[in-house]
Image 1 (cartoon, helix red, strand yellow):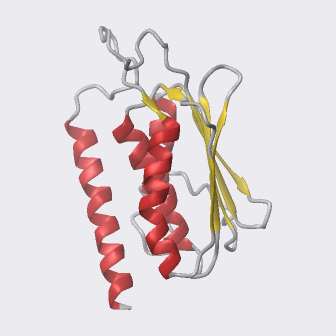
Image 2 (image 1 turned 135 degrees about the horizontal axis):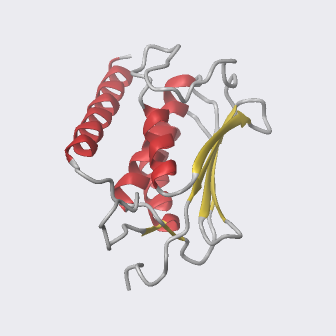
Length: 188
């Protein structure tokens, strides 16, 4: 119980830090603000691989099966690495906060026809409540309710969207459509 509480406090601290960081930025990277010539971008495959590896240690401690499926080629998206990392962390924090220990999850990245990418996180928990859980401040499990709002805003800033629904196992599935990065703006 003590280790779980420490993990939850750590998750809350990271979420608050990201909210403060986002509030301090006058123009969100990847949002294509007026007068902004540089557009943030990152390789979704590299970011997702790194974040899933980070969360895999906690998953192993809790007896959770983790499935990861990534394309072999980089998937450049119109979202900064920091913003994508925050979105992945928020989705995986939700798995740990809202499913029982032992509930497995899968994470995968799919290339989109338009050149962007889709990030999908699906769990084998109890599924979503019938309410709009992506609305700011909504939570039935004692969390801040800001995690999915962070994910939704990141997706929309990239020109994409967040979709919620049931997973193949009856749990929750979150699909984050991330906009395409103009390759002339991609890092070399």
